[in-house]
Amino acid sequence: MLCEALERPYLQAPVGLSSTTLFLEQLADLLDLDAAPFIEQEKHTTLKPLWDLWRSVTQDFFGSSSFGIVATDTYTRGMKNFLEGDLGMPCSFAYSREAGVKPDNEQIRADIAEKAPLVVFGSFNERMYIAEAGGRSRYIPASFPGAIIRRHTGSPFMGYSGATYLVQEVCNLLFDALFDVLPLGTELDQVSSTLARGAGTGACGADAAASVTWDEEATRILEQALERAPVLVRISVAKRLRDAAERIAQEAGDSRITPAHVEHVVSRMGHAA
Image (tube, rainbow, N blue to C red; front, side, top):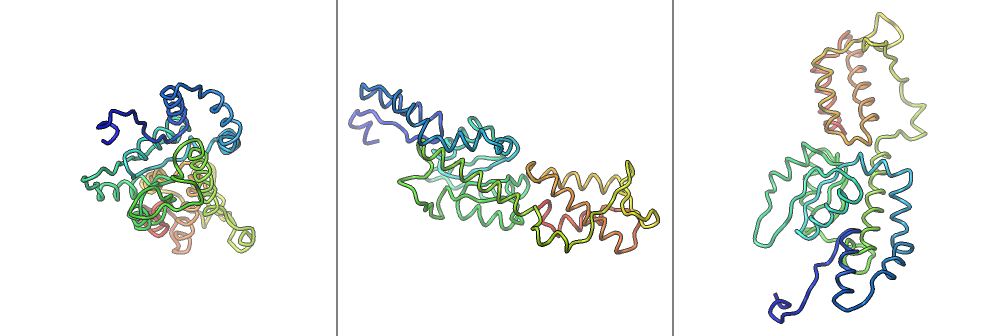
């Protein structure tokens, strides 16, 4: 408002790769400068970690890992454009906090519980909603209430350095998600052997007399639970849920996996955690 009152040009702080490039080009135009040399230099310095991560073996993470964001309008629009438009991450939801407008917290809570994106950017509120939903999403602070304090000059999300910061944070959380699913080496010899399933029948166990089969409804409930799990960890989650349901049935002496078995396992394990 002050710039408009003084009839001075102003720019909005950029979030993401494309927005920062446009910001620099427009700023240079206002100052009658050439931004091209600086932008080229930044691609080989500040942005180098971004290329190393996004174009490396982790590139498959971005196309198969969803995110949600609840933040101020500048952050929400900028980060959605960067993560979804530039990096290819599917966006599960994006809510903007605007002055004088109370966010629909109940809808945000429902989206976190039902859609369970792998990464959620938000405030302390969203962190509590994640905990309520069983902790299936990973949290990155990006809004108040809840301080955003990092070892970074200014806002950690703005400019080229902010783009690199975001990619590093996302990659760290993606590996954290894998860590929570993969067993530790010291635990591998302490668990029971993997259940062996018969081809095409859903049967398991080496002893045919003790084998179990799956009801169609039980399979459908399992598939619905897996749809709520991030693609990145879905195979591991599927194995854990199937093995748990079959083990419960065998311990109870049941020969078929029923919807009750699957619902019990899904509830106990935090839906598809």
